[in-house]
Structures are given as structure tokens and as C-alpha cells.
Image 1 (spheres, rainbow, N blue to C red):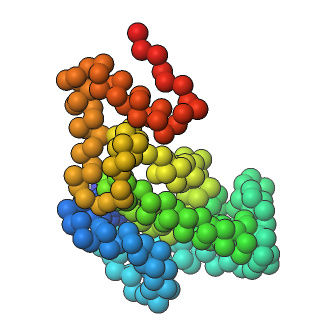
Image 2 (image 1 turned 60 degrees about the vertical axis):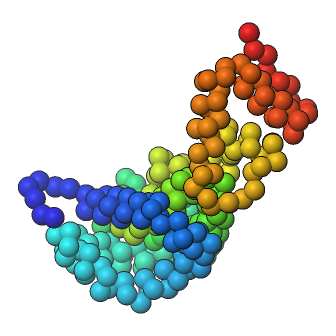
Length: 255
């Protein structure tokens, strides 16, 4: 994958892996159901496996991407210095924003503004307490994905692909404190927990049992098509169903 100019090997590899996982799970429902059901177990096993095969796996990936085995100086020039400093405050870390920036000794030593490893940066800033909270958050995200998968097949496997991409990306970059990706990680569990419009109508009608059947994904489009062809009658029927399950919410008036 070498070529003229510079490129982000991390972004390319993470994008390819994420798309491959999404497409594979979308075509194989049995595999998607197995992965979703055992998502937390697979996540823990992946962490343990990485601890044992990190070095050969890193060598293979960097060779494929045309990068140095030391990850462009990360493993030799940055991570050892960060680990040494983080070990001085193992429980609570240096505090958020207390390690990197202009005038800090760490930035002056390694000449970068992040550890280029999200997990190491969490340990540096927030200590073992922060690492524990991060693990709890990721496991909570797994639970949100599992619940979403029972209602919506596509959004469920999207959540799996996004989780995998985030975990992999933070191995060589810091995104947990990023204003964009970090915010998206915080919002995603909430988004996955909100039923779509089609889901609301079916659940209100007593038909919304948890299922992974692909026909369940066609519910929103069927409702939308019926609304286009039948017009106001179908829209009014949805309002009645919503009001039946939410009597305290007023039905929107239509002109």
C-alpha cells in the first residue's frame, strides 16, 4: 500500500476492517446473531488475545501498510516516556489536560500533543479509575448494541462495526478525548436506544416482539409507503396507536 505522498495508515486500515465487518454481518444473519449475543465475551477475549499477540500482529500489519515496526516512533519514543510518567500517578492520573500542551515537560520531551494511543492517554489523564470507567462504558455500549439488534438488524450491526473501528483506532491514535469522535461515542448509545418511527407503530399495535428477522427491517418502509398511498388515513391511524400507549401525550393536530 505504499504510494507517493503521505497517508494515514490507521484511518485506511480501520475503515477497511469496519466496512468488511459490516458487510459480512449484513450478509450472514446467523453470524451476526452469534456475534451480537456474545459481544461482551468476544470483546474481553479480544483484549486478552491482543495482550499475547500484540507484537507479531503489529509487525504483520505495519509490514502490510508499509510502516515501521515501531509505529513511526510511537512504540520507542512516545509510549515508554508516557508510561513512565503515568506510573507516578497510577490511580487518578495527572488530571484531564494536565499532561499535554505548551509548556509541559512531556510535550517538550516527545514533541507531540498526545500519546497516539487512546487507552494510554486515558491511563495518563485519569489513572486506573479512568481505565475502569472506560471499560464499563464500552461494555455498556455492547449492551446498547445488543438491545438495538433485537429491534433493528442494520443499526445493530452498524453499532458492532463502529465499536470495532473505535477500539482499533485508539490503538495508535487518541480519540476518546476527541471533540468529534468522543462526542459521537457518548451519543451513540442513546441513539441506538431510541426506536425508529416504524418500530413505534408496530410495538404500539402489539406486534413488536424482539426478532432478528430481516423482514422486521422492512417495517419502517412499509409504513412510509402506506402513508404515501393512503394519505391522511394511515397517518391518523398511527396517531391513534401512539396515543393508546402514551395517553398523556397529545395527538398532533393536522391541517
